[in-house]
Length: 152
Image 1 (cartoon, helix red, strand yellow):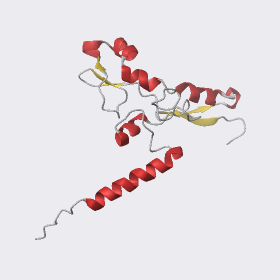
Image 2 (tube, one colour):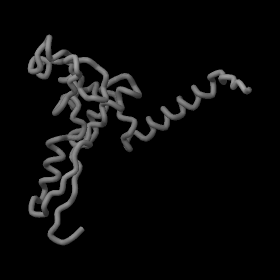
Image 3 (cartoon, rainbow, N blue to C red):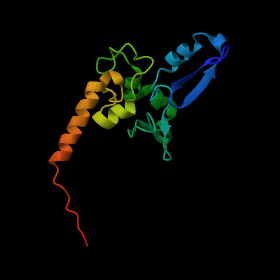
Image 4 (cartoon, rainbow, N blue to C red):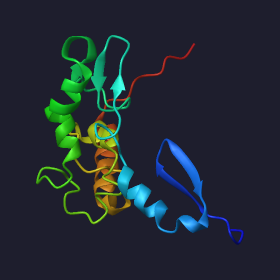
């Protein structure tokens, strides 16, 4: 890095920015403020029909803008509120020292475990969980009956 230049940070997967050196700990503060996965915490998805989802990658309807009102859903949705509470006992990362700067990808947790608060298999700390998922998938593939290939 050039002298006098700041460093690049990616406080969330949607942004990359360069901060001047004189900002000091601002990168860390910004990362902690955004806190990793923002699903249901700092953003959500609104579909063409008004359905609200915590994230574009989480196909879980939490309300509808047209029927329920955005502010009402944002403040009162049980699912959105559970995504905001990283200290809850049922939140897989509740004891992780990085839960406020990471929190794990809630979409990936849901895709693999069917639970928004489950461990993120993409987390390096959860490497053993990922290895178990891979082992289970391989075992499942080996037990399936092969599909016959028709030749001409």
